[in-house]
Amino acid sequence: MAETLDKTALKALSADTRQSIIKMLLKRPYTASEISKILNKHVTTVAEHLNILESAGLIKKKDSTNKWIYYTLTEKGEKLFKPSYYSWIVVLSLSVVFVFTGFLRFFSSGASYYTASTVQSEALVAKAADTAAQVPTPSPIDIIAILLIVLGILGFAYLCYRVWKRKRLQKEMKMYVEYAVL
Image 1: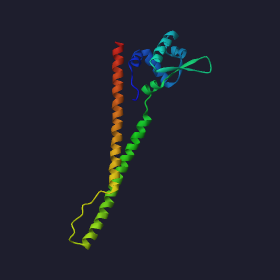
Image 2 (image 1 turned 90 degrees about the vertical axis):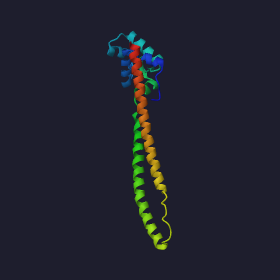
Image 3 (image 1 turned 180 degrees about the vertical axis):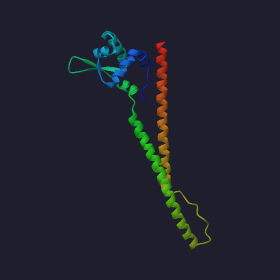
Image 4 (image 1 turned 90 degrees about the horizontal axis):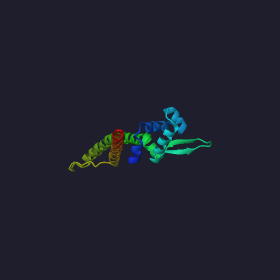
């Protein structure tokens, strides 16, 4: 995750009511009175919780055309609670394409290279019997294939790092929330 939890955000999330409010705001914007009806809490209690979440930078007020004030998640709140799978899908897709294309080019270029080198060596043997066998040099296609495979492996490694980082942050958040509740 690009955004990290600071101390005020973790403290704001330590209450069950505020966690419920965040879960509600993940779906759509709500007014304080709507939240109080859903949670069966008094409006002033909900307003206090909303102020704490707002001061932590997780939610913000959004004025509407009528007299109602709606609460929505801020960019920080969305980054923390809405996963961004689209970037993972792009990296995973590119990694698969790179690896597949790399192997395809490597094996197809290897077959044509060795066929061409066999024909070439037969021609050389026919021309001059006393010349030594030539060591085949890798063609540019082999280098491109290896490069594509390495890029694919780096993409997979990046995805593993992102998953590890997300799980570590969730574990830290869970530990802090459990500690703060005690």
